[in-house]
Length: 596
Image 1 (cartoon, one colour):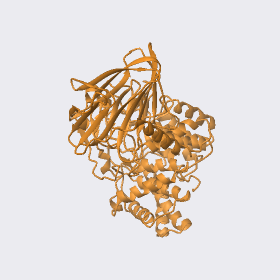
Image 2 (spheres, one colour; image 1 turned 180 degrees about the horizontal axis):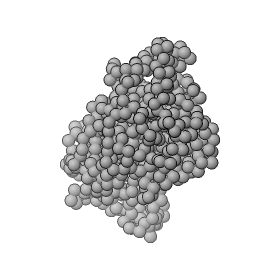
Image 3 (tube, helix red, strand yellow; image 1 turned 135 degrees about the vertical axis):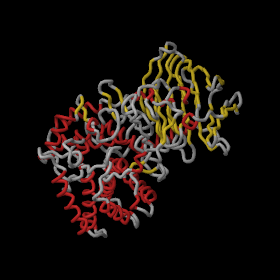
Image 4 (tube, helix red, strand yellow; image 1 turned 90 degrees about the vertical axis):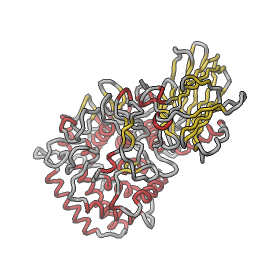
């Protein structure tokens, strides 16, 4: 079976990503984009589904790893009985090519390494045609499957039962570079990568981006790493921000709650933008706003809740039989059926983020405000329609309180854009609809016992209600919010962490359960801080940050009983809410919470 989810580190070139286990195996790599078919798919099966292992022959060798400061260059230090060596793994930041680099450096003594390369293209549905194309002095292996090809250089590999293996020694002071370059199979293989300047360029690129992060507080390291993760999940060509670089890592081990997150959810991207805006990164916001204009194009009334990395609209969900799933959790899915859902909160999330950008100094363009105006019209057109909600329920649509509040927020931001920033639009009509929604929410979205409910005609609560103060609907110390938090603590807390909602209520229309969703607990930190429960906020924050793996990454959920990560990883939602919670503890509130 694959390694525990928390054993994986991320490599990124802001076009695609690889997951590397503590054992030195690249078990997940899709080329050349996050959402491309996998070349290495052992994460969702076993080594036969594709992997690249590189580690000492000594089975007793000990391992420790870290990223070079403020980068995604992973340094894995191996100590064996005969010596010490390190492996530097990274995806090179280049203009026009995709390269995986694995540099081995001898530190003391001599270490014998083994490498095993198993390439299984197209989600393990296509074995490549492989041939040796190098020389004894410069060995190279060329693999082709349909439109895709890779070339592996740096070591003489020997074929054995669909695998290619090699052993070699590294002594103190020696360096060996293994590289894998992707290219279209109908083109010539790229020339060998010059690794030394590639390392320098990649390190400089990441550290240059991180150098402007300003955050003071006890969790600064976690904030910086989380912002780096958000950048790592942002495609530097298109501006699209993926929710995670993986698909089908289970929310419930062995269960069917397995989803493809390698797409751009408008909600998740908007929330990511707010975290970036709060730390001064407006260029990424400008890039994503251009992506949004292209994705929505001339039909805002047909806006989807998610798109492909370049704005693709057809993301139909399919099940793969070629990959058995992480530790047997099936089905493995590519695409996501939620693309066809109506989720009424999404436009509100986008408009809240774009207002934050406007307040931070990002000027509107000739097209950006007309698009927002059209999105407000889309909100009004759907005001009487139930939706699938923030959690993408696959049961019957409902009037979710969170969704209704985000519709209110969309209209509220429209009114303020006209009245405070001189934008064009029918602010009186929007304000009237805003007031109508508030009256409805206050009447139907509040239980007789005084707490906000998950959806109308329900007595359940939902963690998404914690965002109501964040968008300015009410104060964090509003009696209704305090009662809502109390109700959550009674019904949604599992071993100190917060669930999204009670799956036993049947609202999501799915079998099985799930583990605490980490973003919800970070929201609770923010709520505690904003309502004066500072000690509770600090204690919960310390615990949550402590759940990150050894290189600072968080997945979607956390299995408390098994003390392990669950769900797709690393998850943008977990990291952006970590940043928000840390900011709240440092006394900074975002999402225009002062605009009640």
